[in-house]
Image: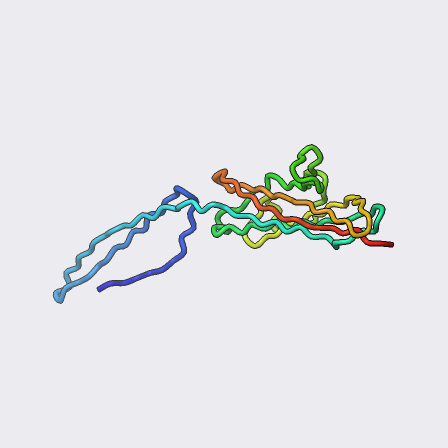
Length: 174
């Protein structure tokens, strides 16, 4: 006879769980016998993944206008329930790709809007953290500015992940 039991086991990388089964039977004279066996499973590391989405209203009045950028950061890891992420960096290139001297650290210069439902400082499975940043953008009508944000996170094993997204703003004639 063969029996099967399916159950979810949640382990971090390298952790183990041993499951023990004991089978007991009796013959037609009531004599019992039993045997025990075990099996050990080991958690395998799944690399974390993160997603950042940057949005704005897409237009500014020519000559200079305040633009509010919104940054949504989500833990998209396959092991999200067991592997929350620490957001280690959220950096906007300030519309100057390749020039890091004017990059904006959104974690310190932006505003955290919310998303940390359990207030543990970790991006858990199902959480999407939101930040905003107000920035003056000066463009003539028809000119565009594209800037890129990079979000970087790390899981509890220290494995890092990052994602980028861009947003383009166009100057409009008044």
